[in-house]
Length: 380
Image 1 (cartoon, rainbow, N blue to C red):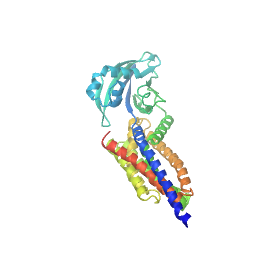
Image 2 (image 1 turned 90 degrees about the horizontal axis):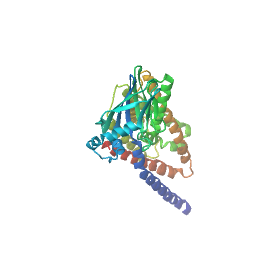
Image 3 (image 1 turned 90 degrees about the vertical axis):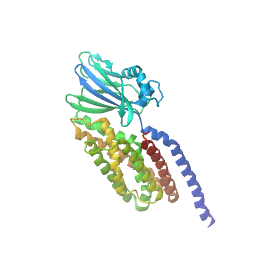
Image 4 (image 1 turned 30 degrees about the horizontal axis):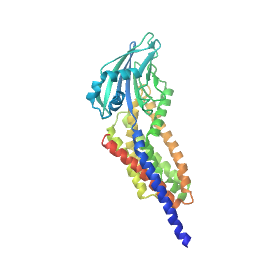
């Protein structure tokens, strides 16, 4: 009897130490991950002209300040003072080339404005290309070396319609004079949807919160029934965000991006709190997943708006982007289920899984959510 009584106590101490270590490590990492989600971006509107191209480049004021040696808190007036330096930096990093050779840039003075509720700098650059001025290509070498996660959203307007693309550190150039085929459009937007989910830590943590208790369900009710529960939850989340993504992308309904991002952070906290309160409950209810999925869909649509739906294949691009999200989502759920089911089948699972995996994991997830809630609510 003595051994039976003391064993749970020994396990409990180990479990609590493991819980404290796990949560502490994740809390220390929280600011890094939270900041990583808010990677820098720029918007480039490219218009083909007779004999060249015109680019309108919009850069966050923070990135512009860093580029010219100013602190991130520098006001617009200080950026204006360094307009020649800022223009030189941008023209030096953006290049357009045609079949006839490198195009000559002519930049206008920077203009201070707003983008997504934050101060930005807009610069208009005209490129005159030598003959033959055909098959133009744009290359962007600004910011990527300082921020490998930087993204440049390029919207290309031509005589045969408009299209969009995203430049990243490993793919910094794009053809300006070619409208992608339907197949290329589908491929590009499936890729963009998958990338956005994988790099969208808030969406991933919300999804993880929804299925964190699935290991216990598999242990007690069987793997098939647990997978059925997970399938219903993931399907509800998919339906929710697909509806709002389509509505927003097609211009039927839109919400302020700051409000959407703040509510997304709140959704993470709510589901994590439910897990903490009832760690041995089944996976989250489909109603919760579907309701919050609608909000997450508006978050997905903000990225799609930056990329831009092509004129020629608008519906195809929207469907492909959503498909990319779903494929990445299914892959994530499948990968996560493996360790969750394994942990639940551990010989000490009755104590370790609810305390460490569900409650400990949910505490860490809630911490991330709280950081994002404050940052986004205050517009930081």
